Image 1 (cartoon, rainbow, N blue to C red):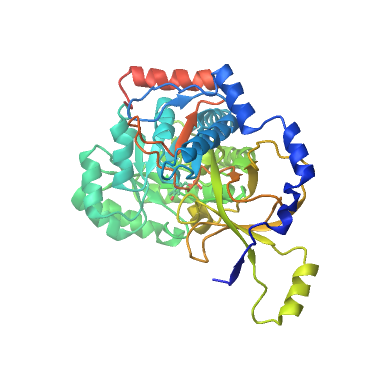
Image 2 (image 1 turned 30 degrees about the vertical axis):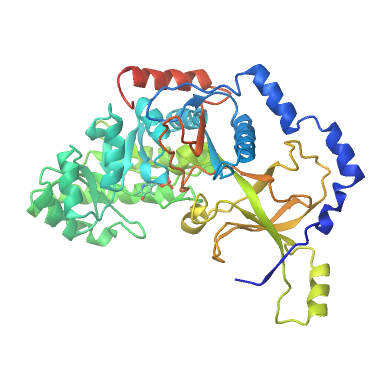
Length: 479
Ligand SMILES: *Cc1c(COP(=O)(O)O)cnc(C)c1O
């Protein structure tokens, strides 16, 4: 880790705690106190939420930003009461966003049934909402299968065990739970399936990077499956997570057509095409267009064809926001290998280099593991500063870096970003698009435990989300 220096107690960039700042503060409309009083009067935002599923935290309504503020308020209050861990980072999940994505899916890919990739975010509310909306589930492990089936109301036929390399015990246990649809990409897997679940319906996972059989081995694999009298029902592909070139779907569907034809040669009549995941929010419509075109071109006759997909990030990425508390800050020391004056001069002229390191109470070992494992780029913004939610646009800003709480130098949340210069310990940063491949397991609600996820059915579309979930619960599911 690079050498660092603690900032002086009164940081030069904080000299503005002087007259001007104080005057400004008096006129700021949204101090915490204002906000608190106002919300207590208008109740909806400060309400305790609805208990729809007794095993889960309550479901609030209203815009997620309001709940970010509420979360900060309640965290500040419990800090005043000296509760341990009171200022930990927390998520706000907007379920109307998940709902909206589902509508978008149905509008653009009406023929393709989504099987939500649970590994992306196994959040219990997300699973319940998608179950209620009729989605299927792509599970990569026995644990995920259990999580989905335990909800209730989800038939095992709505699950695809989409991991082409499974332990034998997993295959057997999944079979005991009624999960028979699974992917494979090698001959060993066929022998395992033959032993553990000879009635399985297999989808050939083709042409990926980590997984997926290359086209030239497909004929021999299919011959082996036939020899073992296994039922191969179709083809699965996955263009890879975070696909930024939607035209890859054209090629993948084209190659799938070839695998279908190889299937015919081997004596199979495939009925399933699984187009995998990797749908990026911003490119979704474009990807859908390529997919629809390719499917029309290569699979014009779809009488006996079932189309499914395994979207993960598409459903949840935007639905979760994170609030994290600034626990420390320091100024980076100049490079020790350079003479002090030279380095100081360098820092002076290099306005581009971070001048302050902020430390927050969550990092790449927690919510931000998406940085390590999913190569996401994180953009923080200020949620609250100096006890106010109002951040004036004219605030002087500077280049800073943001770090997680561990001593590990890899624990960097944002190596270079622009933040107000007056930002200090106790202020809160916000992070959007934190729903995919982050850690946000909600603690079980027991009346005492504070959940680290605040759920809202959202501002718009709130009533629909609530109706869907209440219906699901009324049928006895998800409780
Ligand atoms: C991870 C994964 C997905 C989901 O990918 P996203 O990029 O989140 O859509 C789908 N299918 C398979 C096989 C996966 O491994």
